[in-house]
Image (tube, rainbow, N blue to C red; front, side, top):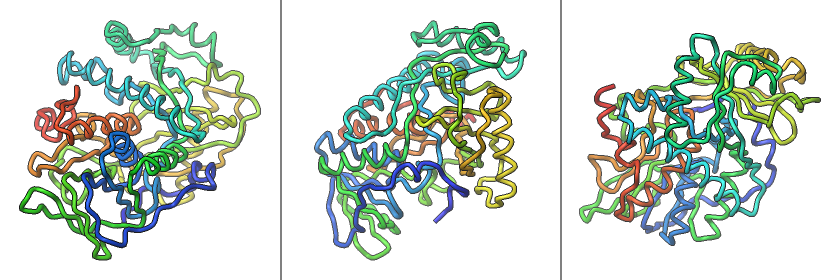
Length: 409
């Protein structure tokens, strides 16, 4: 099993009790088999359960045991690729459609959080996207104009506007309204419980080792213990490229990122509106606060894909992130309590892979490459449910696995 993170994660310490699910021990027939029990798999399963479609989650480890616990829970409609750049890449109608789908996904997540009977620490937030340097301002203004003219709730702040609200001054910033934050571990476990109560079958400790297509078009999966699952549709929600696809999604790359969580800060009054914060620099640093007054920050992406195992070297990265927090908020003096390194994937065209395998009917992928995995997982849950039912989706053509931008990248 490929290791996706190293270090001390924060989210597992916020949830001490949750439901567990037994390994699959007997053959099973379902309409949809979902391989992977993280954010994307459980949201897909939840959507299918609400549609009364018989489905199973097959997770080789524990629910939410992979990348889910390694992100810091920012939920934003904006993407690693600016809208103005995406317009140049795929055209204005498609780019605007994609961005609006991301905005709708945030609202859908808010609706799901409201349906759950658990506290998942979901809160609507605004984001401050600031220019890291003066030369970034012209493009930041173009991005603001692209967003504002296409119906997004945004503001442009001059340096004085920023400094009037925060203890720092930047050359300019876009304020984006309608973003959110969440505790991803609490959220996924709550979704799993709700979906299970609505009929979704969930099995942990169940590793899929074989997958063959049957003559009648159905699919047969086999586990490491020899149990078989037959399904009309199979969804791979495994985060990154599964072995079956190795080399086919050849425009994707993996690297590693870093994150920290501080002890509760004695004073967060200077953090205006508890905004989510990120910047134009690439790779960028991003920050948020927690309900109990901690600061969470991430970034410092670098080329090796394996999480950094050295505690000493991780500590150096953690101190770099802490310094960036202190540069913005000098009054925030609490030390780092948790730090980790995690694998991060990015496609060459900055879009996720969601859709049916063009060479294998009935097999679908939800691979959330990029820094917007929770939003992409939400989009995928509805998009794949539509495809499974023979229906279209507004952005299915944009994120499909054989899209033209992958050939051109």
